[in-house]
Amino acid sequence: MPLQPTLGSGLPATHISRTEGHFLATLHVADLATGTAVATVTLHADPARQNEAQTAVPEHPAPSEVEDIARRQAIDQTRRLYSQWKENQEFAYMDDKECNLRQSWDLLKAGNYSGLLRAARANAESCHAGPKAEAAAWYDLGIAHMLLQHYEGALTAFDRSQKLHDIREASDLVDRCKRDKAFAEALAHQVVTWMQAEPKTTTATAEVETGIIFDDDLVIRLVQGNVEDADIVKLIATQPNRFALSPDDLAKLRDAGVPEAIVNAMLARKR
Picture 1: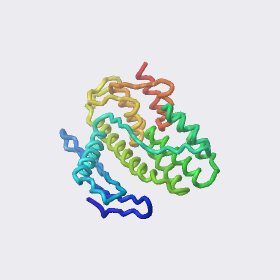
Picture 2: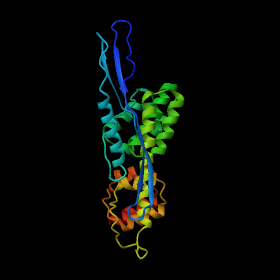
Picture 3: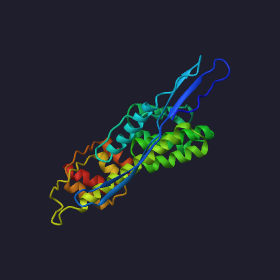
Picture 4: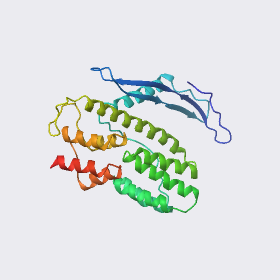
C-alpha cells in the first residue's frame, strides 16, 4: 500500500515515499489422529519500506517487496509452533550514565543474561533520576526479561516504562512479547495434548516416543505457557532430553521463573 509522499521543508529537504504492508491471519492447529483442536494463534505482520531523496520525490518501494516480507514473517511465526526456534533479534538498549545503565550494557554485550536481569532489576527499582532516566531503566529491565523468555515480566516492565516516558521502540517490543507469549502458550497446549494421549499403561520410568526432545528452552516455554508443574515433571521423567545444567544455565532457568521442583527433576534426569 503506497502512501502519499511526505515532502520535506527547509534546507536540506528530505522527501520520503513509503510503502506499508499488513498481514493478518488465524492459524488453527489440530491433531490429525484425533481431530482435536490443539491451538489457535493469530499471525500478523506490518512491514514497511521507504525511499528517501533530497532532489526529487523518490519512487515508492515495490508493493511486492513488502508483501514478500509479510509472508516470510508469517511463515517464521508458524515455525515457532513446531520447532526449537532461534532467531537474531535487533532492539535498542539504553546505556545512559544515569542509574548504572552503562554497567548493565556491559553484561548484555557479554551475553550474561541472568546477571543482566539482576542488574537491570536493581537499576530500575533504585533509579530516581527523573522520568526519562527511570523509563530507560524499566525499559532495559523489559529487555532483560525478554532475553530470558519471561514475557509477563517484560510486559510489566515495558508498561511501567511507558507510563514514565514515551520510548518509541517499546511499543514494537510489547507486540513482540505478546506474540512470543502466545507461541509459548500454544506450544504448551500441544505438549499437554500429546501427553494426555499417551497409553494408560505408561509408567514414570518408561520413555514414550512423542517426538518431544526436552531442552532448557522448552522447559521455560512450558512454564511460561502455564502448564502445571506436576505435568512438566512427568514429561521430564519420560521424554528424551538435552538439558544444559551448568551453574549459568541453572541461573537462567530460575531467573525465567522455573520452579525448584522442575529444576530438581531436570537435575535428577541428568544424573
